[in-house]
Image (cartoon, rainbow, N blue to C red; front, side):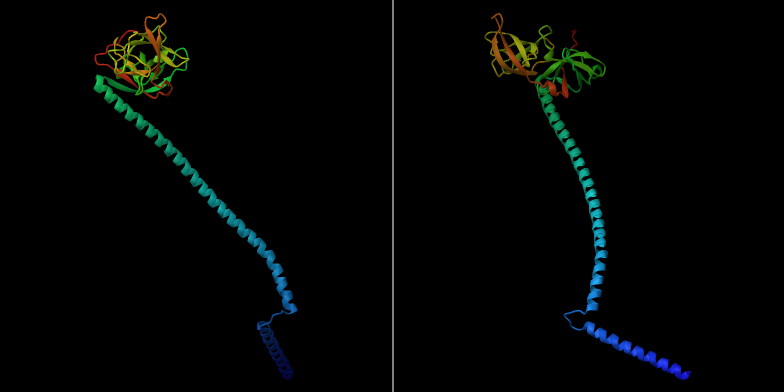
Length: 291
């Protein structure tokens, strides 16, 4: 029994030595500089490569998918930031344009009122236009100043460009203005003269022609110095309109219907379709007149 055990032990030791020698031989053979592979190596290499490609491609697709998702999220966030920036820029630009426009208007208004006060000692109440009547047969303008602010009927209303009209109705906190474009020959006319020719020119702004968009000035004497291109202003006669308020410029002059006096067509200076702010003119000692 002991002899059998020793024999088996010697066989296992012998087999282990043979296996170790073969392993070393295979290792040496594999690590050697060979240009050609053996057929087992080729078979194993091709098999492993074939299996690897089926794992590699899906892994590559998944990696690319996650990368695309990450890029899409970055693009979405960047687009949101750009949208916010553009919206903020548009808002700031709009605010800037409004403030710039308002600043220019206020500068012009300040210069206008200072110049007028120095010339005629008038007081100007600045008012905002609330609404403009759409009625073609009764066009009126509503402003946000009324009797509580010192506004009275028959006060002249103007802009930095020129005469707008006359206050026709007054409430405590708002007033209605009848524009000069509503002159029809039956209402009170506007006594007018020419800048620089105040003592040599006189006429009455009597009506407005809606087709030509021009005012008609009548009762001009034949030897009057009024000429095409002159600036027409209020004369102050009649105690209704203050003097020196620009009405418009002379477009043409012609002989009147009866040949005794001349008439002239006047282009209004005020831009009636772009009214946002107006001035109510307070003349010292002005008393409310009945219509």
